[in-house]
Length: 402
Image (tube, rainbow, N blue to C red; front, side, top):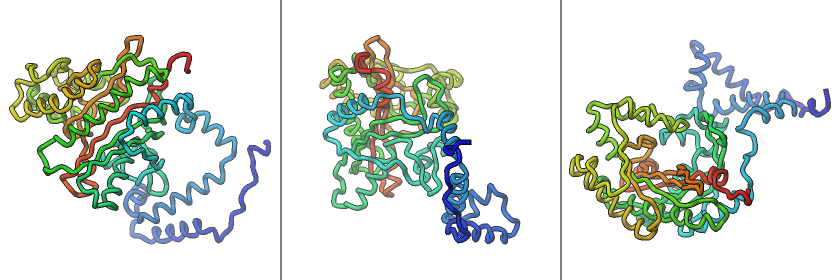
């Protein structure tokens, strides 16, 4: 074996602090009645600091046993630790355009990790994020990092009370759900917008969220307009608006007795066709409207409160957006299942059209209830949206720029 495979080891000592603490914890646990099974021990019995100490001890000892050869082999087989295939200069150029379009938003450089459980709090399975040994997890979405940032700002600066605060961030994130589509990798860069505001009403009115969504969509529409001049083959953009309550009302009206929660659980982000399959299983036809959905039978048949929500989304978001960007396509979807349990109220999808004619989904967004939970204040409103900026570089970079 070469010296590379067997590097010199850092000498260990019997007085090693981590090892000593781990031994003390093991001695305490061994004296418990039972003793508890290993799965119960890790999940519930150990105190937080003990859990961290044992994990650090185990990982530290395993790390010391590994060679450069072991590290090399893992790097070869695990996409999670491999460099992105995207050209860093093209990524940098796109970030520059994005930051210019989001000039009214404070740009934040987010931390690469978040508190453990952050993803689970917003409904993401912990198996799909990378937890660390120090009660943290690798960032899986910049929107969640921006939410924590917003909550901290609100706590530290209460004088900013009802002021609408706006942030944007470009972040490389890691997700561990299965991806089998070409060009996809576990880690990638996203660009997100977030608006935190305090509504004059505790519940029932989405005017604050609609204003925020209009501002977000103005950024994305301007981005689509600027991209061709920056060397990207973008020929146009389209926005699809919806509302989680309207979707739920439509599903129940078309399929009485349908379990909406169960229906949504069957939808997988990495399998876009799963939403269509779930609708078909429930006996519901897709309801997408390209014109004014308030004149469409799918909305006219809904109860008046739902029809009013549809009118408000049209009047407060679609109409002013269309007036400013006449070339922007705007449609509506009453059967959008993706994100139905993630967003609360108005939500949207963003599509960019390639010069070859393909219409590709590049992002989404909507109102979420996270800030209400983080600050225990039901007047808080938080609106997010984002696009797959790295995917945009991969799919839309002009050939001469690649």
